[in-house]
Image (cartoon, rainbow, N blue to C red; front, side, top):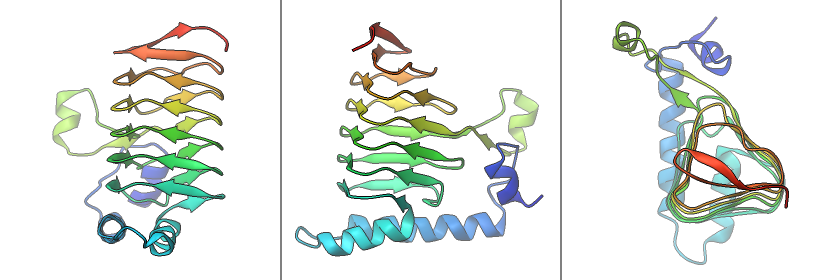
Length: 183
């Protein structure tokens, strides 16, 4: 398997691989271009984001936006990301329709071995993140690798989501826990 195939499969891979390094450079260039656009350049901003990730419909993303690769991110219709969104997309990050991210939301699929000897190898791996439809994620929330957030959820500001959140619930805290049942 190539390092990219290992990465996409959630296996240990070397992020220093030339193919991955080139893909990362492309994403950095595109996000830099996006983050330098001026007010009123909405058409240009839309074009850059469509080059970077998979958009299934309408969206609005504020500056600054950062991601590792972009090609692993799929956003549904009517997606909104406020200022300072970071998505580390070494594995798939999938958003349903009508998702809103408040300022400073970070979503991570990348992780590292817990074993110190394995960690010294500088190899890493990832776990996909899935966020359902009609989800609102509060400011400065962190979504950790491997998490699924069901449809119709609210994640409180400052939460660190380390486990799956069932559909139709409100979750908050660090680590996040369900604080209100089915809405």
